[in-house]
Image (tube, rainbow, N blue to C red; front, side):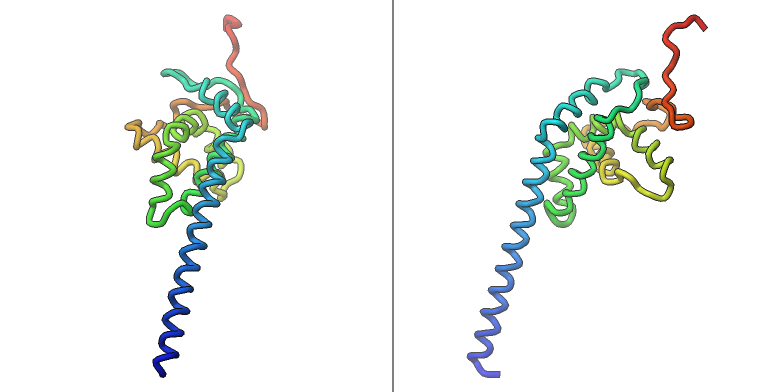
Length: 171
C-alpha cells in the first residue's frame, strides 16, 4: 500500500468518525427536544396537574380512571422511552431522572394501579413498561419505598364498569 493511499484511508476514517459523532449529537438533540415538547405540552401539563391533585395522603384512590390518567401514562411512557437516546450506558436514564424524577414519581404513585389493570386486560403485553421502570427508579431516588400492591388501589373494574364505593347510604 502506498503512502498516499494510507493517508487517504486515514482521512476517510477520520471524516467517518466525525460524521458518526455529528449524527449522534443530532439524535441526542432531537430526543432532548422531543422530551421537552412532551413535558411542556399544554394538555399534558393540565392533565398532570389533575393527577397530582389526587396524590393520596394515607388513603386509597377512589375515583374512576379518567382520559387524563390515560394520557399521563401514555406521555410518561413516551418520555421514558426517549431515555436511551439521551445517553449511553444508562446516562440517558440518569438525565431523565435528574430532570423529571419528581413528576415521574408522583405520576407513578397515583397511576401504578391503572398500569397494572391495563396489563391484566391484555396479558403478555407490557403496556407502559418504560413508565413503570422509571417511575419506580424515580421513587427510589427520592427515598420512597415500593408501593404495596393492595395500597392505593384504583377503582375496581368489573364487566368493564368501574365500581365506586357507596357514598354514605347507611349500609
